[in-house]
Image 1 (tube, rainbow, N blue to C red):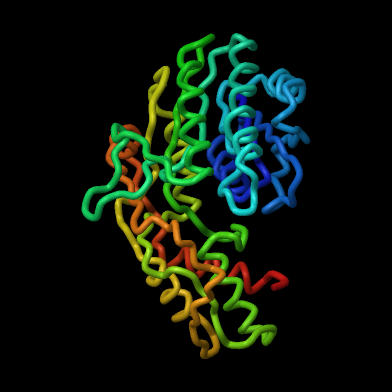
Image 2: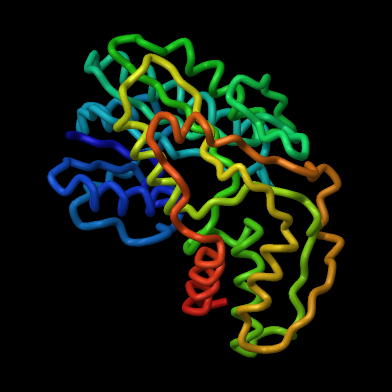
Length: 314
């Protein structure tokens, strides 16, 4: 088995490398890295290649070197914070197209995982998690880029033996995630307070938004299992728990685990007027294909994330 992971040194990529090396000890695993600090050291068995995914020649060289029969495409923007729409489109859509072109040109059968997002559905209705056949209604630049990526990618389904699985993962978190995201943002503040580096106040934004959270370790296991499933030219699969949780409930869990007393204050700069009230996904199709179920309790996710930040320079 020859595997290629793009974005291998990012948050999700680093956990996926651990998942793959643990389950495929004899596999030949390659990964791409570019332009940011690694979330964790890659396992020694992984061959990392510096590659700019916007450079067609670089992508072709990676595909020729790795000669993969399975590809996990994670490279791209994970949010739109502070980034121009044109750049997000260039990375999330155009770079994905170049990768698929290179894989099709290689002419080898290949199972390809493309990471999309549950946010392509836009807001979901209480009691009615999003299903894969629902019409996309992306809200915002990031979600729109993922929806456009899906439309583009479908034209490659079945070409030159490509089997494409698009995952619409809902919110996922855990140790190593950047503090631009909500759980590590809270955990980092609490760790700094515990270390005496900040006043005992956690500053927060909208706590009433409802999201579907998974541990990153459950997410990468789903990614692996989907590429073990019977291949199909094209399929779209939610990676979700089906359970909505308020951001407040996550904060409460972290505050309960804090080692010092602290208070919570709303920070107007952290409020996003466009926040969707709810976004939850239906995991039924994932379960049917792989028998996957979440294994990591949210309480452990929160505790592990807080412990990780306790070991960092805050």
